[in-house]
Amino acid sequence: MATAAVMAAVGLAALIPHAPIRAETQTRNSLSLHVEETTGIRRTRYPVNAQVPFPPGALARADQVRLLGDDEEIPAQFSAGSRWPDGSVQWLRVDFNASIGPEETRSYRVEYGPGVSAGAGPGRGLALVEDADAIQVGRVRFSKTAAPLLASVSYRGEVIGSGRNGFAVEDTDGTVYELGGDTGVTFEIVRGGPIYVELRYSGRVSLADGAEVPFVVVVEMPNSKSWVKVTASVDDPARRLRQLSFHSPLTLGPRPWVWDFGTDRWTYGSLRNEEASVVLTNEVEVGGATGWRVETGPKGQERPYETTGSTRPVVAGWGHLQGETEVVAFAMDRFASAPGTYRIALDGVGQASFHVAPAAPLTRHVLTVYQHFVGTPVQIGAATSPPSMLHPLVARVDQAHYVASGLEPPADR
Image (cartoon, rainbow, N blue to C red; front, side, top):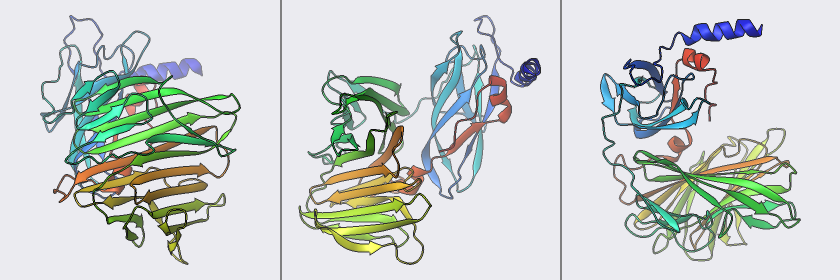
């Protein structure tokens, strides 16, 4: 059976012509890359993050690639996500922007080989400026410690204020620990632009009982949208943790600030003073029953404002907070997707918090939050709706390419 499987894989590998790594070979090869819009939303210059598999030896370097659409070169960013033991590219990251209609599929061609190189520039790209303590990505500044995480998003006026800033975990005794800090954090630039930037922080959290749990924080930014995507993952084999949260201190100028949540009723209201608070909570039971509620009032004294009611218990983990000159759209990925308690809180000081507490202890906790910073009045094409942030475009190559490489297609989000 093993021999037959190997022979089948070798036969399918022949479906992908590829050049050996030898420099004297100038063969130009290509494969098809398909981008699909699956949510029913028109996308304008929307970031595409594709992963293209290659068999061993098929692609020596990530710069021996270019992307074409309708026989015209498309500005793209190429990097090796992983390599085979011989040093050739295993997974190639292809980052570019696409304008595509609702439920439309578009096909592109990836050319590769020793005689290929990208010639098209990205136009408006993200510039990175790094110093000892921080890194500037376009107009957004991050610390290198993950706590605090976002130091500045100064587009016109500063939108980041003082307060809790970054990810935190809470153990079963109720003690809260920040992810990151002044010591013990490893910082890495995974993708350096100009089309897409990815930063990675890794470290360990020391719990009160002396145990340590590892964490990774990933920050992502496209050049075509003014959003920041942050993801934290924490491994907890002993199940000592009960909650993972993200905190962002915002400053939006004079109040009142208008807020809304993506409920089926488009729930909205305002924060009129420093004591004001609004909290969206969605609880998903193990049996699948779910219900949401929005509470408002002085912080710590919130009262019911809207609830699920008897019909359509639907809520999305997104919304907006708007001041006089700035709007922050936010979205919490996989909101209410598994048993547990999900919470988004905003207050009159500008503190935004996103929490997920699973119904049962997990060995791995993950939380992803998007924040999209846009000035008012919002220009057409500048804003991206929270639902579209939560449902990125799907990019895949033909199944034969996965089989020939021996790799599985990337998992759907």
